[in-house]
Image (cartoon, rainbow, N blue to C red; front, side, top):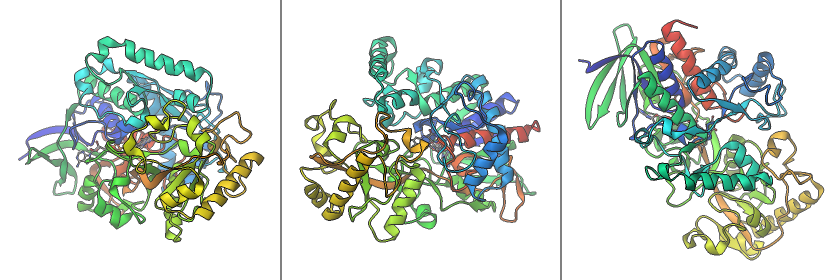
Length: 563
Ligand code: FAD
């Protein structure tokens, strides 16, 4: 006997799930969102909030020309046949409408003029403008009580672990623009002077990135009247005699209850990266759940399994949105190293002390290269990011702030030989981290030589517009710097991810397809719960959140019969 009845039940509370719920409620469907953990927002709340939206409303302001045909061609080439043309086209055609909808519900975005697509060598790529960053959001609109139910952002996305910083500001700082000094000062002043707000909560009023996106979505969900339940994991999907999905079984405080869904169920319960058994079954080895950067206790593939129990087809299960990660004690999840590896004066080596990749390339390919190197027997897991005293003085590396601001003497004592390793010479460092000293010295010598000539003869680091986005624009090659001045440092990298990308196969409306190629009526799936429309690729920054929300938008249109 069903406990309650809704039109739509949405499973999970990441960006795709919430956007679908808001849209559905607005279109007249009484909607319930169920979240497994005690906090709403999922990995989406930890994210940069970036969305990859071809032909978007702000591209002209960013000075970028784009059109649907070019964007479709680029994405199709990236996808390499691992998602159908039909779905790729649906994405390209709808993404900008979804972004427009976000703006309408109070979550405007700006195009990032200089953030290039991830594969500049692929025809149809653009040197910027397709990635969009959310405009800062004032958390007062959500309210302190609701804010406390939202997953906080990761320390790595904040200044001094407290103050929000947006993608434009971060880029300006890392590019060492003069104006960034005033920006930092402004951020600090605004935070500390906002005593009325800080007396209520430690969390910054000014939300950026994924925090701005999720705070905006939760605000819109509350306004639309969406019902949200935390600590309510999906256990099973319920079908009627015809096979149509008509509800869910939830668990709350150890009790199972059935909730009916008249129009359907939208799954948005994330990937399976926190499930070691599923990792062992599907992902390339070695693979460990603790290497992931996504929230502990969240994404264990529950809804993958619930869909499978109904005969749903799985695809892309061996792919993830890879990123190198590092372990920072006391941080709840491993930290993704997205940016630092691109800055001049560092290099990444295997156990032989040799470089094996372009450090500035896209992070999914970086993670794949680590695994491939390991499979060759060269010890790519863990890999080591190595830098010298000059790099240390000027640049951040994970939780290490630039030495000019926080010298080694001020770093936590427990971090030495745990978060970072330090040697007076390269031989000394090599001995400590267990890599080949001759190989390491040779790699540093070559990198120093390449920094002088501006050309990386081994991996062409800095050879394209994507690499150069995070670098020092004052240099001939913004991504190359010498590694010659002791002491030398190393940080350990693991092949982690920001989510898995395999899941239930869907059609262009987000409807789940079974192993016989038929639609499972009443069942929709988005985000990392579904097989990604990006196939093996990461077309540009925002390639996970953009599709999650776009297919949620399409799914609701399908449910209500309004294209
Ligand atoms: P999630 O956001 O993880 O949401 C899934 C939710 O479902 C979770 O809250 C989980 O607890 C819940 N759930 C799980 N099982 C159940 C169940 N049985 N019942 C009910 N609920 C359940 N991507 C981008 O596109 N752009 C970026 O800028 C970006 N930056 C990132 C930065 C960082 C540091 C990280 C970690 C990730 C970033 N990503 C980015 C990746 C992106 O955050 C994820 O791919 C995306 O959030 C996945 O969305 P989702 O809705 O599928 O899953």
